[in-house]
Image 1 (cartoon, rainbow, N blue to C red):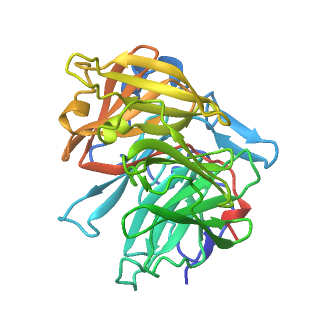
Image 2: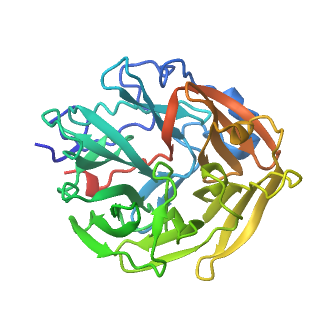
Amino acid sequence: MLGRCGGVGVGLARRLLLPPCPIRGRKAALRFGPGLPLLPAALIHCGGAGLPLPRAGSASSSITTAATAGIKHSQSLAGFFYTSQSEERYPRSALHFVNVSRSTCPFIYPSFPFLPDRRRLDLLDCCNGLVLFRWYDVSTTGDDEFRYVVCNPLTEEWVALPDHDHAAGKVGTARLGFDPAAPPHFHVFVMLLDTHGFISGVDVYSSETGGWIHREKGWDVVDVRLANPTLATVFVDGFLYLRTLCGEERHACIAAVDTEGETWSNFDTPCGQWGGDVFLGLIQQSQGRLNYACINNGVSDEEETQLGVYALEDHANKEWILKHRVEIFGMDGFRGAFEGGFDWIGIHPQGNLMFFVAGSDMNTMLTCYDMDRRKATMVRELGDGQPPYLPYVPLYSELESIHM
């Protein structure tokens, strides 16, 4: 029976906080996936002091403790989770973790061996150190026979959520919300879609209450759909922010819903017309603000193709300020944006660094763009890496909500 557990191995519950950089009987130089050794030198050229080195004897260069919850949370980006698919293995889907810090700490096993045996594990979302999965028991056969599982990869704690009514003809996209500066509880949002793919409502799980609630959509706009279900959402100040397409004209918007499903809002992005996922943009939380990055697609061949990065200055009035703008046509690293092989990944939570992948399906390249130096640096080949590409920031503390 799937339930709550914190520790290594199935059925072994323990509440020991693991060391910040556990070796667990393996060498620290162990690769994070086939052909993916740690390459800190590439990132030294991409950002300089933007990716801080750990202090001697510390687990991270930037660990904060939330006064209200006593939670130790690193604000420094450790790396990204992503997936790959292959017909030559079973299961055909595999999870990977690429480290973009200058340290092997924390050490992450992308196979998540501490979770119970399963026939399939779908990576859905990451939020401030917690990871959300769909977990399929070895005894199941259907695609709708799963449980939502939330875990902390660093402490190896996990919890299976109560059954959710996902088998009753409803299609949903699940996302995770967790704020380490708030009381130590997380929320799982399942955005429910109708037969046309429009958002019809939301189911929200609260680790504080241990139950689900359902709310119908509360937007003024009739038709709102997720722009790209594989891209990360943002949870900030008790709201989940999503990239959406609104109305019959399908113009790009950002939508938001709170943890009670009571307050809904949508507002325009700071960029122009929509011209595909690349131009639609990316939302992330960086330096305490909601950020939006996009590439304008222009209206003529003479118009410059620019990367723009904006920060939401005023949540109440939805006021955006321009943070960065640069012409990228012909710039090394951005070529994939014009050739169809481009995926946004994330913005560094502390520094002015952006990450994306470019290339063909079998040869994707992780690239870092330094906004201060206006330079893109190719970091590492990811092979046949596929979305979702999810940023991971370590959480070093135990949470009552995910252990026995």
